[in-house]
Amino acid sequence: MYLYPKWIRVWHVLNAAAFLILIVTGLSMQYTDKENASYVVGFAKAVRWHNFAAFVLILNYIFFVTGNLLTNNGRFYRISRKGFVLNLKKQFKFYSMGMFKGEKHPFPVTEERKFNPLQKITYVLAMYVAMPLLIISGIGLLLPEITITTIFGISGLVLTDVFHITMGFFLSIFMIIHIYTCTLGSRPTSLFRGIITGYHVSEDE
Ligand code: HEM
Image (cartoon, rainbow, N blue to C red; front, top):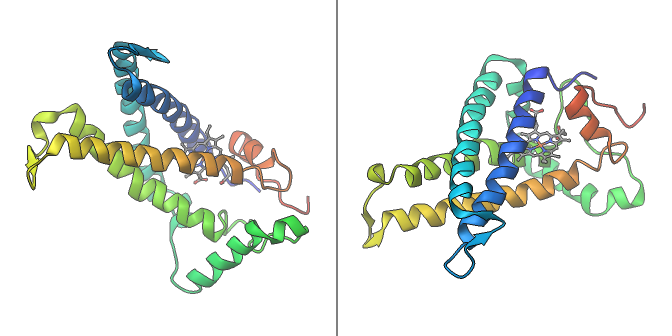
């Protein structure tokens, strides 16, 4: 099944690369201090690379949203209320028990259903909630003159910073779980192959 068009593959590889650079340089900036002058990457270099990767991530994010608006891929991100909780429970039960007993996937991939319910909700939360918040708070830190000076007596910049780090943390956790769940296809490598070649190999093939 051809499920990952070329544009989504290009978006994904750029997104993953930018993300990895952002994590390394973000952690470097956070943990660099006077005694620890260069944590993984030197501070000045970390700032430069963080800004560059963020620029790539933002342009690429606009490309992702536009692509999903203009092509059929957007339909995979639409959540239906019908059976929402029940389907999530079924998928969760499969990940926590069923798969260890060799049961079949409760929501096998089809041309019409690329993502299982748990995958869909986490992708929607990551791409349409956490990413915009990460980007907006990042722009707030890059351009402190546009950031609110104080909120309830607390520095707006400090709050924006904490918020940005929290979103970065959530998305990093998302990425780790995402990579793990991507090993749960018909073979541990088949989903990775899919996002590179464009073709998904189902359980029965
Ligand atoms: C090195 C890091 C990463 C690896 C190895 C990886 C791996 C994969 C694989 C194998 C797939 C195809 C399986 C599927 O459809 O779920 C996929 C899809 C996807 N990944 Fe990643 N990923 C990485 C980073 C990220 C990051 C950082 C994000 C977002 C912040 C992300 C968001 C997505 C989304 C939204 C899809 C579905 C795209 C679509 O078909 O519409 N990934 N990823």
